Length: 208
Image 1 (cartoon, rainbow, N blue to C red):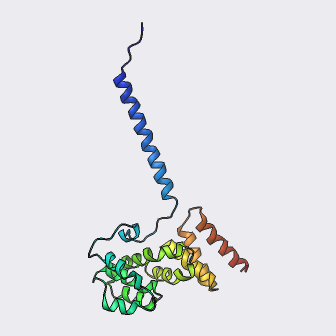
Image 2 (image 1 turned 180 degrees about the horizontal axis):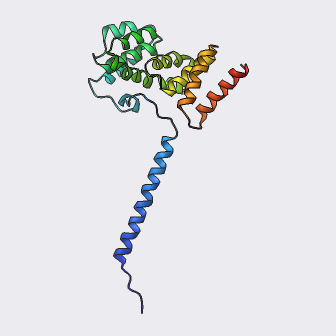
Image 3 (image 1 turned 135 degrees about the horizontal axis):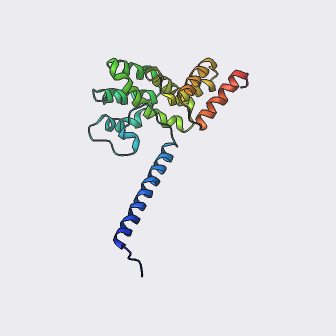
């Protein structure tokens, strides 16, 4: 006798297995993508995702003034077009000062905020300055990252880039301090960790 085949149940079982496997494939791909870049402590900002910031927001203000965040134009532009009076506004204004190399003005802008808001503002500075460091320009990004460390001492990527900048400029004690703290906080076996360990090896062995 030919066995009776329940085609409807077989189809439902087949589709359940397909969806199950597809779900796990999605999880594995997402995990792999997250592993490409370490997560940092700064806040997630729509400005850094490439999406247009909401009109009237502090991020939209920064998008408008960003071309003028340079040593020659920053002061006049921020005086004529001040940032929104909010912790986001202060964070983006500090980022503009910092990118222009005016670290003292950036610090003063953050310090005008209540103490409870300074961590958040420093996170905005980190998000704006981090791409500069990721392009390999630690010398330019170093002072920005050091500013971030003042308010976010556990921000391991800020510690890394500041440490590398100190190493490049021969400030070995500060390089050792920052990179040692970076390794304490960041235990992913990747290029950043390898670079930090290599620099510390050179510093400990006197190999410059």
